Image (tube, rainbow, N blue to C red):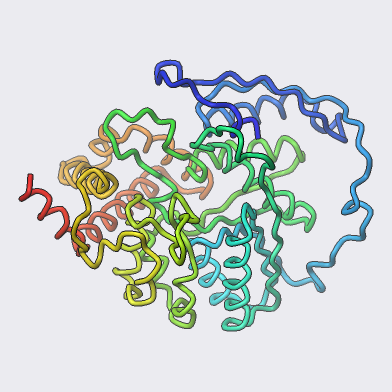
Length: 400
């Protein structure tokens, strides 16, 4: 909430905000340890690139109606439980399908943040289809409505970098009630790394919600708070979005792929349109589904359909396409060097943090982690260079 209502300075040099928060809590003794506040502040600082100072105080709370209710028995027997985030996007859909396809004999709890009725409806329909097609032991959807009232009359900070904290917190809270010490996030490796599309980015708009280093810091915070080990797992962190979609289980649900959403601006404010078609998230989605053989399942609902090569799109609106192509060019040049990893880190210094965090989270060696990241980036470049929208780039280059 503080992130959304606090506008960043227009001057990028003064872009860092200073937050001083006093947060009332029920159990002050659990929160009022320096290690808890410090680990939370470090996490939020990395996530949002702002300075955070947090103090906890004793709150006076009247029990909510939900707190007076008995707990819902989400797990009716002693079978293993998997708790994961479910946004309704293509990655969470494909990851959930893969997980259930490979192990139906356990309980799956999917936790969703619900900012709008349209998003909730699609989340419901997707999970209902997965439940019917794959028949897991149980598949429970836990949806938490999260939105601010009265936002129409107030300017908000558009980057919303703290949303990652909200989503992770909801998933962790549900996992804790079930005595599960692991939260799964189904995100492709390219999206998790989220390397910058500019050589000298301001950094503010480049989300770190599921970056491995951010997740490592979040794990540290939760472990400090609960006095126990807690882990956040990204099972697909070394796979491209296309590789996630290539899982055999997706074929059973191909008709539901079009109901997933990926656009940075979802929902697009136009009838029968879910995607703008031009943001980097939309382009990566089209790339993945085209590579995985599902392009026919996702041909509708784009404000601009790049795969139809529709004319009249100005070069300015193709900024995301040019940026992604330029980024791939940087990666390819680095991979052509004799020392691939050192060259990649010169191009993208943030890969060092990603490598170290991934080593820690997956208990792997440095050399093994580097090879996995190199393979991931190589695969992404190969997919990109076979993508039909290269025709757009060639035509725009000739026009220039």
